[in-house]
Image 1 (cartoon, rainbow, N blue to C red):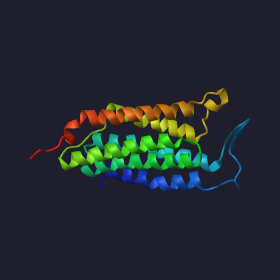
Image 2: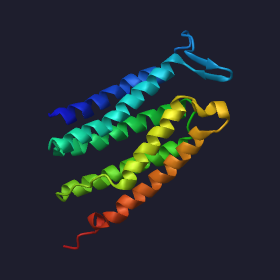
Image 3: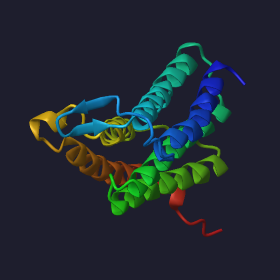
Length: 195
């Protein structure tokens, strides 16, 4: 249980705290941000900050693990699992809040399950499916899109650009492409053994 793995576990532990602030009704508390038609509730602001904090630890644990040669099989398993739990939890919550289309959440979560399944098949074969370039781009775009949805499209709301909607659509498309990319590049793992 080294430092990178502890950071990853801390990311997982932040998920229920984020969910608490995102889904519990704090309507009794005044809105901290209120400019014209823009409003952002106190609890959603805290949920967004927790989400960004949790998402930022993904790069930190990976950097520490690689720099100090602390890469472990547990870390290779926990790190993508923590990312999937974080993204799935917040997307399902955003669907419930009416801020994200359910089909987008289903597409993104389904891709995460599919790639996790591919990684499990690889582990059974004694191999590890490392994060691809498209997988990393997918993660960045998802974080941007989810952050904008959590923050009610701040600051683009003021200029009338629905950048949160554009970003979540881009996240869905890149998620699909990166999923296909994983399976194409690792198709040998899915070959049937005729023995």
